[in-house]
Image 1 (cartoon, rainbow, N blue to C red):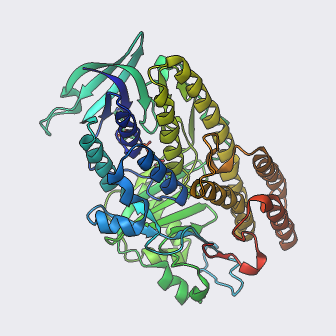
Image 2: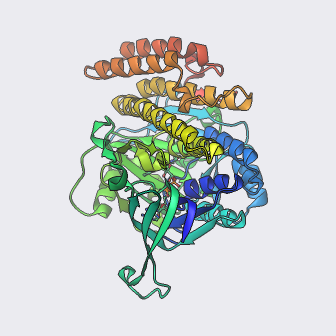
Image 3: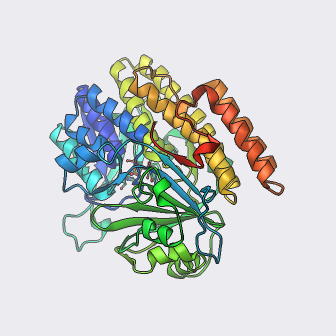
Length: 498
Ligand SMILES: Cc1cc2nc3c(=O)[nH]c(=O)nc-3n(C[C@H](O)[C@H](O)[C@H](O)COP(=O)(O)OP(=O)(O)OC[C@H]3O[C@@H](n4cnc5c(N)ncnc54)[C@H](O)[C@@H]3O)c2cc1C
């Protein structure tokens, strides 16, 4: 029971990093407490997630995963692995107690395309299927993947000693009746998605309170969700102007309480979740869910025939942060180190960056001195990125009551994301590139300044003049990186793929 690298957690992040290390000749084991297929949240991919995944696949010869980078190839090669097409991001602003109101200038809508066609689209991942496929592929690549094995504790000495609880084979047994074992490893990667078993062993600090974003979520999967296309047309929306079908997207319904996501899979199931900015409510989840939808008649119309396929989940505060994220013989994947918010779907793309960076660091194995330098950099870059992401997301919440203001602020995200995508595509991306172009001091500085100004602006009344001035400032700020016509007022919030 020993190996060179133990990966705690067999989600797609854990199994992917394990495959990359196995391709480099490392003896890797993945320890997953559940058994695939298992439910997981975090379903909406982005162009950047797919581009980094593609680079990883090509670098480490993991071609079996290549079809997953585009909707068309996915459906062709893995028709049984359930997913849905994602053509971009769509936002619709709602007022409590009133049906959705569409205007000819689209002031209550924002659509930003992420790809040119359905064939080349990104995807909504049914995580139970996708993570099971990653796990199967890892096994086929020679990675040992142990399912039903929880890492309870970790002791750090000359080597790591992990205390494991292996689930009893007999399904009727209680988990406590499983078998305890220990496992030793030279290096540990925490891909547990939070609640790190390394917490005490490496002295992690809980820094979640330092994050400005505050939100919680309620979510489930539903059958029979009416399309927004139908409800929006009935509300007089001009769908001909939409650069892509608004349902084939990460659909965001913006509300006073936060926002509601809808992500459609091809098998008739839709992931629906509400992200709420209050500190939590008493009462049952079902009552809270019902009361929220009753306030927004057009969203309620979409849900009027919907039936949950699994129980609703209600989280506590979503934001968490552990630091540092690496040491000489251990590292946390981004999803284990922090989480801010699902808004704009940054999680899986950042996980891909983490996998890529750690895999590069392992190319120095067995030179532990060189690896330590790389791991130190890995931590500083991840911390800098979290410090960038939190204001980027929190600013969206500051602007949430005004879609035109929110639309203007999101352009920093789209400019950073699209610029990073372009650098990946044309081969100019460098190892030092930060997530969403956040390593560029000029870009980062402008986003940070705008965030602070936005905080001031939203203290007072936000009238059309304030929004217009802010939108012009964003347009000027992103100009050096804006190659696709973002912030063009003539587009009236409708951005086709360029
Ligand atoms: C409400 C919500 C919505 C989100 N939506 C999006 C989205 O739309 N798009 C996006 O890009 N990202 C989204 N995310 C983020 C996304 O969930 C993460 O980026 C992603 O799941 C990270 O993958 P991972 O494999 O690192 O971790 P996970 O998917 O969390 O997998 C961790 C695995 O570790 C296992 N594990 C945990 N502890 C132990 C242990 N002690 N021993 C053994 N195994 C263990 C778990 O069983 C699990 O299988 C969302 C997150 C939340 C909370």
